[in-house]
Length: 428
Image (cartoon, rainbow, N blue to C red):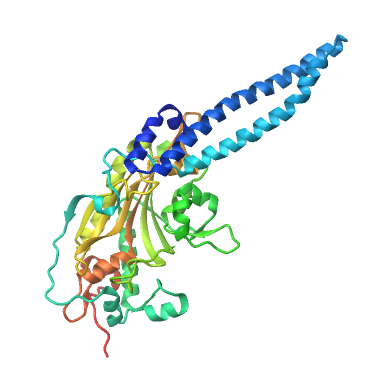
């Protein structure tokens, strides 16, 4: 959520930012907010003046009556003031709600380094890592590969839950848990505190984290409950300090969230729709930082470096892209994606999203920092995937499959899997 002071004092900053995004709808909304705020300030001044006048008139009538003088004119004015004040109060409240709702719908101000573009094809590559393996045999789709290994059952999951779910079985369960434990262990070593949040959130908290008008259509809502199943642990971790003031001396607060996540979205029809890349239910380890505003950009680089370290240790080739204006979304001021190499599709696919949300989330959630008795300010929040296990599993299965149908387990994960080196095909 943007600061109304920015809109009042430097509206051109927001205008130029929306021009970069080429978002005409939000440009129109910005001008409406400016108009509402102008009316709100003017009417608030008039309301305060009329409230003051009501008190003055009341005293003057009392004085005139004590002096046995004619107070007819003042009594007429006194009779008219309450209705006028009531109408003004109603309009002031209405405008305040319109302004707040409008500010919640405006996107964050972008960092100057964010490239301009229409969609993910305009994202700018920053760097690549890893050697791409050349295969001299036909690669199986990872869904078919899992079934041949006897470690996944999509059909029975579809029978009881529908498309987008899977029974993970045997070594796939161990590999999924190995990814979780590997990420947790590494990030604890980097100073992050593990947290397993509630898997459901109330609407008010969710509206503080993200723009539900953009996100609500992919979320599961509990029927007749003010609760939504979480789409990522970023959301409840961000809301953990809602309506609180954090002592600056304990910042930054670094968390590594672990959760099962739920989303309605699923992959488009086409290659590998029977698979793990987009699921309605998946596990994810997420990094999250609360920090002082002046420190957030160094922490943004720290977060993506942590994600890179994990994929480097697993020896998965990847590239880092700087998301363009058309792909960055509403909340982030800058976002990196880590895209793992897909040998079947012969392209990179997003497996990590790393965002600096600056003060946007914290203002929506009313989270500030400062010292007791001192000035308070809105802090900054950042988030990044560490490992979304479903997508990491796809990368491992695709890049590590062998001619005999087996899959080599990355060496760094083996200690979490009883030192198992390969997942072998099931015997017929």
